[in-house]
Image 1 (tube, rainbow, N blue to C red):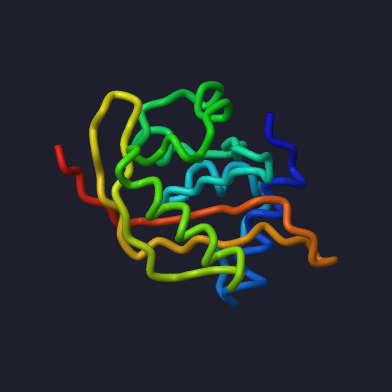
Image 2: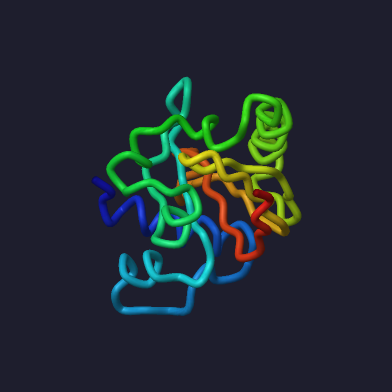
Length: 145
C-alpha cells in the first residue's frame, strides 16, 4: 500500500529537480496522481527495486492490477534484451538526479510491447537529500504489437 508520504515524495521530487509541476495543484494528491493524463511509476531502493506505485494509465499500459504491479521488480518492465539499456538509464539518473528525454521499449504482462518517448526519469530525493528510489513519467507511447 502506498502511503501519502510516498506520493508527496513523487510529486515534490519532480518539482524540486525539474522546476516543473508533475501535476496541476490539487487538494487530493492521490486522486490527481492516479488520474493524471500521463503514466507515473515509482520504485524503491531494494537490491532488485520493486515498483511501489503505478497510476491508472501506467497499470493499463502494463496490463496489471495495482497489487500485482507493486510486487514486480521494475527491471521486468523491459524485455531481457532491453534491460542493459534500462540499467544504463538508471545509472545516469542516479548521477544527474533526472533526465528528460528517455525513450525505450517496455513490455506489458500480456506480452504487448510499447515504446515510450520523451520520458522523464528522476530520483526520489527528500529534502535532506536522501534517495528513496526513482520514478518515471511519460505521456507519449506507441504500441508496437
